[in-house]
Length: 346
Ligand SMILES: [Zn+2]
Figure 1: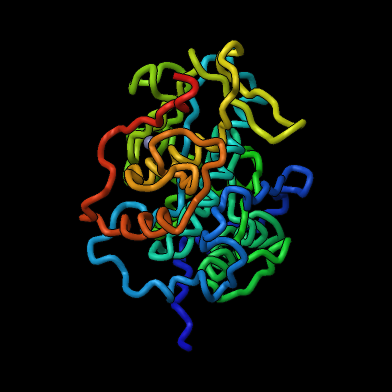
Figure 2 (figure 1 turned 90 degrees about the vertical axis):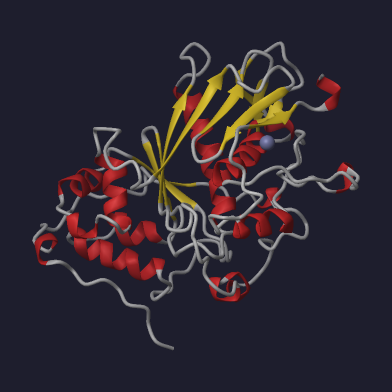
């Protein structure tokens, strides 16, 4: 097998001095892998590496959509301060990262490193295998980038912490010294590749600059433009709106369920992560699954148009996501669509 080429170090980024202060283990947090959000027949469940490798998805998209080569997602959360304090914002970020983590492994036609970096407020979520190469250990920035590149291309095998074929994210504070050093480094020679995209997302002050360099998402909690019968609305490649005037959002299961935000009188609470999973599907370009002749009780697929607390990612969504890598796919979601409240709550 011929090794995929790793890009060579341009002269001008070689001189970056070695960085000592990196993300320490006390600052980093491995986020949970939500295997409970995989449908029983999902290709994610208990499959081996080979079965999930991109080589098994024949052919690359002829006219690739934006997600195919998108290593970095930058998210802004908008929520009224009186409803959502620091821990509430942290929980929303965590829920979002859990959802992105489920989706990103399904895009077998996306390039290596698809959504390996997600920036949410004060935190950066990094693929757990890329994390040690880039953010811990020593070396100058370019050495770290090279190590991370090899991991992303699968040239260096790194064991996952739990032996699972699916990686998760490690969360680190954005204010680590390395993030600052990435901003200082001259990565212009890598501007169209992931290091340059990560630098733009981490460091760009002018939000209008380089709008195509990385994906952006606004997650807003307030009025939902789809109307009273809907919990939330997803606008592909753009934003997600959650209603908070008639909805209460909670996370967790059983005795460890707790409310995150919303109207405390709107009970029962809905699962924030179930709604997030659905809306992230819209963000990536998926429309609703048409299940007219299927009993919905049988199949809680995440892209059904009515809320289910047990939403899970199924083989149907996997096929949709990979079809969606073609820019001209006819079923691509292009307009805002709403998630209906459960029938009992209308
Ligand atoms: Zn929807």
